[in-house]
Amino acid sequence: MLPSLKKEEKEYVIARVQEYFELERGEEMGELAADQLIQMMAEELGPFLYNKGIQDARQMVEQKVMNLDEDLLSLTRPAGRPKR
Image (tube, rainbow, N blue to C red):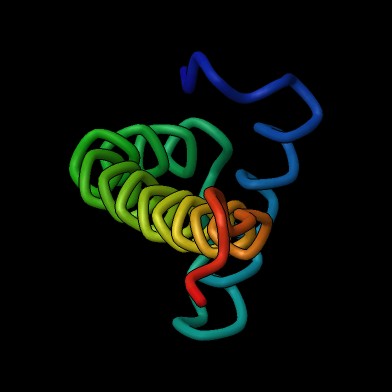
């Protein structure tokens, strides 16, 4: 069982896997087999997909920080007396 999926989400994914096998391969797949395939794929692919999500989030945060830094620099004002 995929711990992070709600019951409705799990049922949806199982149905999609069954539909894929039926349409693309002409094979019927039971719920248990689909669930086991999903579990295996989650275990094998999950860390790669998770790490990609973290990488994407990190790039987004770095861009936001860079923009924030530029915005803050634009707010600075000259200090001291003007030179004559």
